[in-house]
Amino acid sequence: MIQSIRDLLKDMKDGDHAELLLSRYLKVQESSDKNERTALFKRAKNATKNVKEIYETAFDRWKKFVIENCDVREFHIDQRMIIGLGGTNILEAGLTLHHTYGTPYIPASALKGLCAHWFADFLATKNNKNDDNARENPDYIKIFGNTNNAGRIQFYDALIFPKSLEKGCLCDDIMTPHHGDYYNSDGEVAPTEYDLPVPVAFLSVQGNFLVALSCEDKDDAGKISSRGKKWLDYVWTMLENALAQNGVGGKTNSGYGFGTLRELPKPVPPPKPALRKGDIKKLIRLSKKEAEKYGKTFLFKDEDGNLCIVMGKEETEIKKRVPNSGDTIELVFESEQTQNNTKFLRFQLKK
Image (tube, rainbow, N blue to C red; front, side):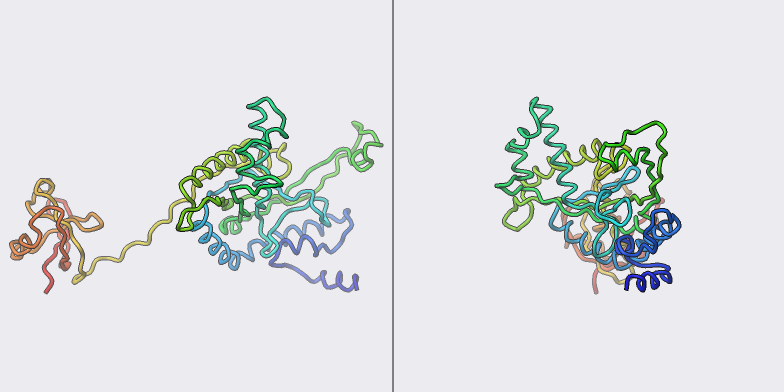
């Protein structure tokens, strides 16, 4: 049976699930066959791009949920990141990928653990106590909880942005441990200067991730209360420092896992359709002083800030309907005019 499966794998050229490929589809298990390992990594990198269309649908749904119910930030990896390096794997080096989509993500437990560790260190340094005492701090317990109490802050898995998949989120990487015999013998074989380095290939991650936090302190409408937002601001500051100073995941001593948190860019509203003759718009009358800045005595603005004038023969009637500045009226768009290098929209009364 095993041999039959291996024979089928020989004809496999690609795939759509990187996590499944890395855990089940290595054709030759001997560590001496580097070509098979290289080919497997190439298929895994392609798989994260192949899955982009279906993943983007799921990501957009998730993003909509967390924006409506949580507080969100974007985490940008400065260089690279590796999570799950020591996990159970048929390769020497593991990698944590999403079970459903095979894409990189940062588990909520990793973010919470990193943040809690940073805060415990901060409290221990501030109060000249050890970590165990720091973890008994009331603020620490309120935020992260303990064996008897749940914390107020909920951490969510950080999903990678689809654009990062498109650019290529998995990267070829290598480490060269020099003293393999020493590590494998539990210290019975002494390390020497003459030990040969053994290169080990692995995959690391680059890209941007959507990080979401929530607080159980809600208002009557089910939204995060003002007090809850203060707690979240407090935790965001911790997490920002932890990611910048400690890094998340493995090999942080080598520079992996460091990055910055930033606000999500505000969505750009779609352009409004061009105004057409006959369209009805609500206008607000400007004061005489404001109108005189444009060489007029009677002037309006629409909701987009465009300057608006009215048909001369209808000016008297319109003045009766909006006698004061700030009054509003609905008029019909007629045309666009330019006077003294200033654009005006011309309106008339509805028929």
